[in-house]
Image 1 (cartoon, rainbow, N blue to C red):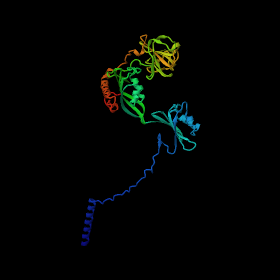
Image 2: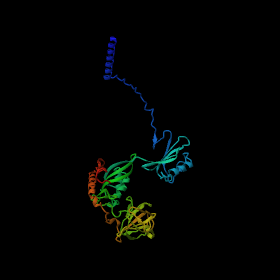
Image 3: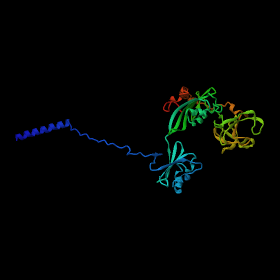
Image 4: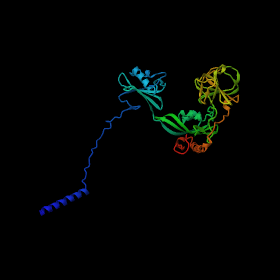
Length: 436
């Protein structure tokens, strides 16, 4: 009995000792060995995508929409029934009407590789920034997709040696920038009389899709030196309207535009008290300015006003006469046709199309004769000193000056040779300063 107790004590102490050691020194876990497997990269093949659709098992036909070409004609060789085309036309009308395929726009057709070439998707690009997918299999529908547009701030500057257009293109700018720049300085610069040595600087946001320029989002600051006179253009939200002002807050927008046609036209004859008339073959006064341009070129009213006359009459041909205020009246002659809705009493807005260049009446070629009255007297439109519109509100002039100084400083620092090396430091939307 005594021996039994002794063995029990020894056994208990042994178990206690082993437990204590086990707690202090846990058993080592065996590391799991993972065997590395070499994977052949050619085993997994990523599909080739076209506008997001896999095309490895299909073919693609691409082209441009022809004049007066419709969807039925385009898909006639791709095994699509008239019933499916009619259904597609009905279902896609609210997305993009298939009847509005624009000539010159790109399209592509994903179709089967067999002899029937059954179309699966018709993809149309109505603009550089979007595309429309017409699905022709399983479920017939249309869907508009936006392309990712990249916006990049750029600066550009040049001294003009030939023309504004060529100078901008020589600096790598898009032709889209020309029209916007002309609009900014339309009241200060006579773009028909650009002088060699005129200079300009621009800060602007450019929009690109797949590396191609598709638009100019905004001009954030501009400078133009014309015949030695400097002009700054600062965009600023003045009340509810974004407009351009000089560095002091005076509006760049005059009461009237300098020209009724885009700047690409040329002046073929100026205001003169004695000129040999090419049709009547005699000398007489020419109290207007002739702008040579192709037939059909849009003619814009140079200012807000009310139409006094819009009709055909003798040597004037088709013409429109507009009263802008108590001081100014303008007239536009020899139109090929008068724009729809333009009749006596019609209220028109500055820049609105009122007709199209032609050669009606006494004209020996397509051009616009533009006439200008000031205080009831016919004068030379190119020599009229036009008044400015209202400037920045007094309540905002302090904020404007802060913003104007920052834009002007950036413009002044732009070098005519190395302009792209400068990053513009114009206040962003997050800063407590007004921005365009």
